[in-house]
Length: 186
Image (cartoon, rainbow, N blue to C red; front, side, top):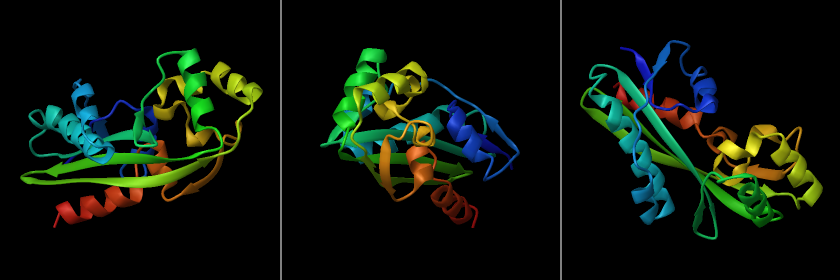
């Protein structure tokens, strides 16, 4: 049995190394837009499931892990910013507020499947325009849901507090995925 990670995210690939150093990455493009019509939790689970299903046929005897992460403020899904000005708008919107990060994941092994999600609450500091501009200039916010990465917090103090799994906020809740892998291998 091999592990297959159905994600091109460098952050997920790094965290996957905590589960196994021996895995392959396999990604097929899927349309995520249709899922955003669902509630945030159903949307993130649906996307994770479809990401995994897209590679199932190529790896029928392997354990496939797929995931998707969304940021939700006031029941509105906040995706990746379109550009720098959109990143600034998103960060201003999140400033001094609490929001939720949901990661849906799917584990598939042989004829068994587990689809689940993890939710964390993230509380932002009040962000000055200067901090937002420096953060955006670093380029880091441009490829992340919600226009931020919790791993950037040491250099750019944007987050006051995370309630729940920090790995989940990064996009790959390692503890819960490990539990699901143990369950599916029984």
